[in-house]
Length: 338
Image (cartoon, rainbow, N blue to C red):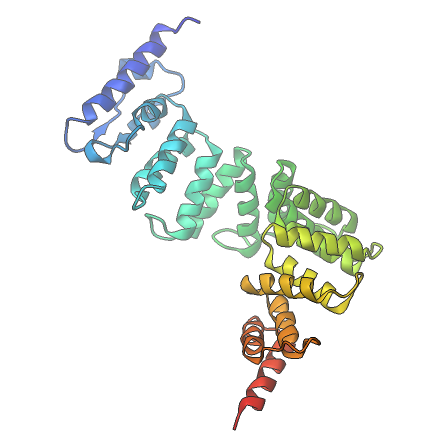
């Protein structure tokens, strides 16, 4: 395959800039000249990327930087990621490359910038900027950007509140295969926020979320099966999805699975599984799981009771606003009083 003369000139120019950066102090501008202005991917505005120099150039990044300069936005994103994971993180340099790529229309880099402004990584926290960048990421069809943009619109964090906008953003995220977006879409359909209540669509969206291996999506799907929500109750299905959710890291899924085994709801009682699931859920600060764990430690039938562990579990449940957990915690404190 022949390389055009223009493309060759651009690449040689970019590599030359990086070579000069290793022996000159300060920062050079990737400034516009005749060769660069001929490249269709590099506009005068975006050609002003300031390249790091000297010790600021990480090992094995020169080729990536050269590609970034000539408009390979994924290369810019990769360079930013390497500065992010440096020890310590070099946020200012990471953000510089992500911004350059975002201005070029690279959705993942816009999403990264949205997170940077939301968390104050190398910049002051600015939820308005965070929302703007997530919207840009969504406009570029990056699914995580759509999901996060929907959350921000729903909460009124930097933009909104706009329930309808949140629904549309979540709908787009789900269509793009994002598990978080599908979970959010299912909840919005179920609760009628930004859209009329539609139990069938809620179920389908949550199922897509679970298939995409999003733990909270599996938990919400299990809740719909457990309660019915206008559909037939399916306790075996609920238990299966709670267990799957727990495997995927959902503390609430663990707590719900433990509760079903503890009380024998839709399944034979199983003390060992009740303890294991409740303990795992409580380690993730799920209030229901901690309440169940406290019950097991305080009242277990095999006599292996542990009041200290029970009090710890009930205290966590109480902090999570679990009323019965608070009652049990106070009961233990009263019994321990002289």
